[in-house]
Amino acid sequence: LTLSLDLPEHPIPSVTGDEEKLMQLLSILLSNALSYTPKGGSITIRLKTQGRAHLLSVEDTGIGITKEDQPHIFDRFYRTEKSRSTKGHFGLGLSIAYEIVTAHGGKIEVEDNTPNGSIFTVTL
Image 1 (spheres, rainbow, N blue to C red):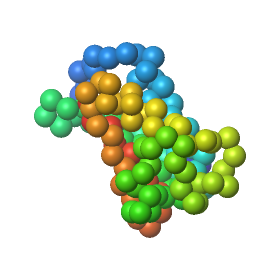
Image 2 (cartoon, rainbow, N blue to C red):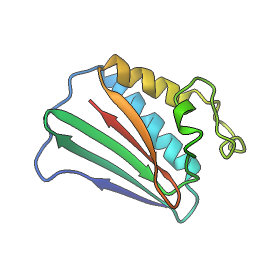
Image 3 (cartoon, one colour):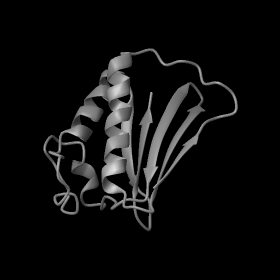
């Protein structure tokens, strides 16, 4: 497994928020990427600014999330068909991540990373 960190050359201004909850958010996204990315795969964490917004993305080469599953992925207890064989997950992590992001006035999105994998992007 290859883990990469892509940071801007210049420091990003700090984000105001609940530090513990924001750390939990990062932990959820990274844990999911680690759980669903096979050996030999890769995970990239990116930070960047876009105007006044801060963007955090976690990109993996894991099992991916179909277009049909994407509208439901942040629902409590929702698990995709491909993820049901993975032990230790109950379909709560991404719903908690969604709640943390919205409580901070942000948004979280998922997109397919063709040919496989996913990209989760948090905008604060």
